[in-house]
Image 1 (cartoon, helix red, strand yellow):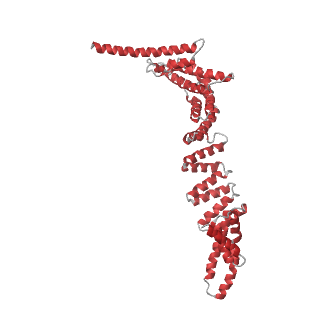
Image 2 (cartoon, one colour):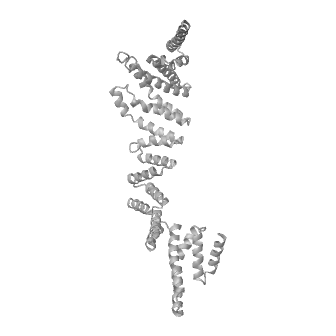
Image 3 (cartoon, one colour):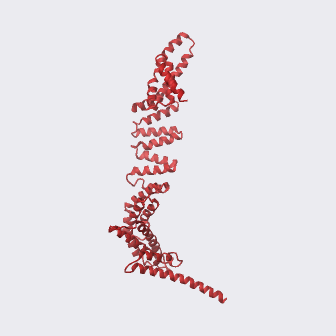
Length: 413
């Protein structure tokens, strides 16, 4: 039994020795920091174990001392920069962030009631003073990492600045200044930009969405959010952003056109047509693309004749629009083929010859549209096939053109 008691006593002494050693390290760190020639790097080495010790890490003085040491390391490097010297910007930035972390813990411990239920409040005034002068340093730290393309650390540094309004240590004057601080939104923007550069769309969206409607230029934020949703292939949110954009920025056809493309890709022609009409009503009525799309949808729904006026409007707006030209030519060509079938079915020879003589004019109708479409897009097989059929039916005078189209058709097989 005596051995066990002795062994337990030795353990207690060993533990106490470690505690005393860490308390001694805190004292030595303070001495290094306040010496005539301060050695902050050595002070940091001395304080580091005390921050992990089970006893000293619970003491406000440990964290406050560490916070001051890291702040002094930061400040030393900052002064080199101010006086034209060469500062270690990485050391400066990491020390600033460590100072913040330590002082935040110190303040939390300092505001925790003791065994008697009293709040010590011994260090807050000093903590507030240091934290206040540190704030702008995080802008520079984030900027340094951003230039280095170290985007994760850039976000981390900027986020320290953004955390300032969440601290409970400020008086009303400081808190009011923080709530009106325009740099908050600027740094939210740079957090989003950093995340986007780092291909972290989720973090980019977290910040860009905070700025919707409150950051200028306003439309740019919507474009950024749309870009990130697109990168994530989040179609649901992408469509919602297009809708908001179409309503907020009707003068920009990008949103309506994107919506039309989305609904066309889903074969939701009714909704696509609705957004085409909406875009036209909001000033995009000079878009040949929209008139052509509207014509295609109407034709697809069965109103072939009704679609012609929209195809013709597209050609009026863009005379070189091969799709619209080809569609008009195709519709007239199909009519000609149907008419030819009707004529060929006539059994009365005299009537047949009379109707057959009219067919040249019928096949001439699609010719200029398809010839121009073929000129603009000579590899499109549909134009070649239709022109071959037209030249064949026109007969005399078009033999060479028929042969040319026939050769092109065979070579494209």
